[in-house]
Amino acid sequence: MLGQLAVPQPVPGDSILSVQGLEVSFDGFKALRNLDFSLAYGELRFLIGPNGAGKTTLLDVICGKVKPSQGHVHFKDSIDLSKYQEHQIAQLGIGRKFQAPSVFSTLTVFENLALSMKQKRGLLSALWAKTTSEQRDRLHERLGMIGLQNKAKERAGALSHGEKQWLEIGMLLMQEPDLLLLDEPAAGMTDSETEKTGELLHEIAASQTIIVVEHDMDFVRRFARTVTVLHEGTVLREGTMADIQHDEKVAEVYLGRRVERGA
Image (cartoon, rainbow, N blue to C red; front, side):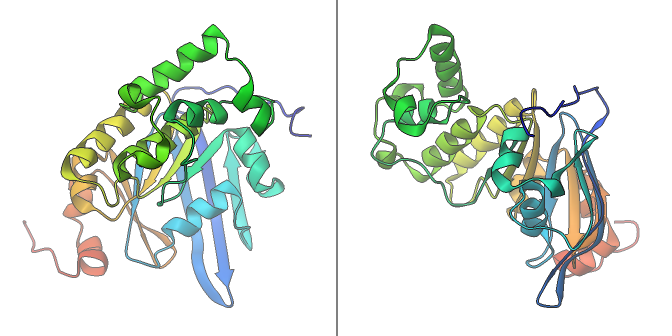
């Protein structure tokens, strides 16, 4: 069924993702409450909010890890994601990166990327098969983008935490997803690594759509374009970081203070 699915082509300004009336309950607790959310092609969207606001649960629903009790999630206008399993959603063009990096430690950086390349071969055959010149060009392009071209022959296990995060982002990009879901990509990084990660997100967003869940407000302030604030499982506010910082409700529920009039 998946191979026969006609995937609509993007039109600038159209939504790549549309969430309507989404609800998720865990043992009677509503993690998401009548949540509406939309994302246009080419957006770099940051999700912020207190712990338990529903940020990770929303990503879990989008990638198929969690099924909603109510509501709809449509990808590329006509694809109802609730009908697909997690691995099928990945094939449709949605890639997910969790907070902790997950790489093949005993393999080289280059081998990690080669294994992740979008292809029909199995894991072992992909590792030992020869790459074409076109594939090698793609691999080196991604190595340059993630800043690891000088470490292509190093074992992934020897990389720093930040470098492992970039490698996993590169591995995700080798799958050629249309939508990337990133959970705290800058967590645990040094200041210079955090800076480079923000720049990398902007570079990726030139050709793909990204949702970032983030708790580091300095990182959000520096690199966010549009921010969605979640609170108690629903959208509290959306806008630029400047809009968010001066919103009284956001200050009350998320920052723990009131915004003075005229501030």
